[in-house]
Picture 1 (cartoon, rainbow, N blue to C red):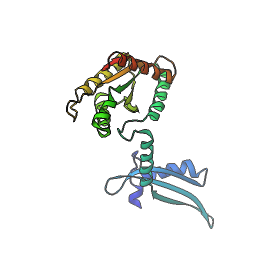
Picture 2: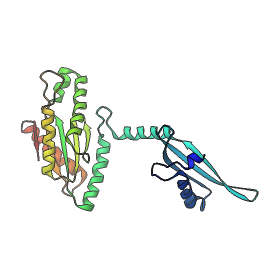
Picture 3: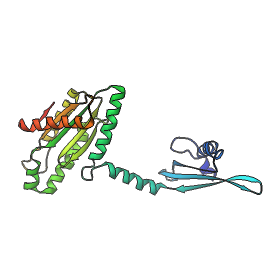
Picture 4: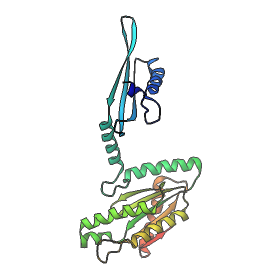
Length: 241
């Protein structure tokens, strides 16, 4: 027990200090308090523990009953569910729902702090032809490879996701339309010169780039979508701003 109390949690505080903080904050006002903490087990692996404390009075003496429950498996399940709700099962990129939520948040930050925000909306040219001639498995492999190329071409702060089918959306915080155009061209060129596993295969994209101008989220995406279709009408394999 002494080993446990003298163990640091994930924040560097001793578990005993965490308990004292719990006591000062909680048990002075309510008979029951609980808090989750992270701490390493004897093998150095991180575990989640739920500390619960209840005040007891017996024969005129007040004490506390403290319990510790390992909730690591529950936390792992919760994390899996959270990730599944945010990501596309095939590519591992963020899904459309999360992209909307994140873009709404980025727009709020732009309205508050005034920095630039741009998006890239692109899709794969003639993707149906790949599915029809090589099969849907080949099409899936292409989509997965696109996700790898995106991660290679973008900054850590950029948010890329599968918008639907063969369409992808990239959110670029603190980026002007010119900077986003450069990022889009990096993606386009990288995909065009990727070493694809099928003989004669070439994957090109058509994309639209827009910078946030103070309008609604839907108008922002529609602007990029309009430019994407202009790129297709202009011959494909190009980025329009």
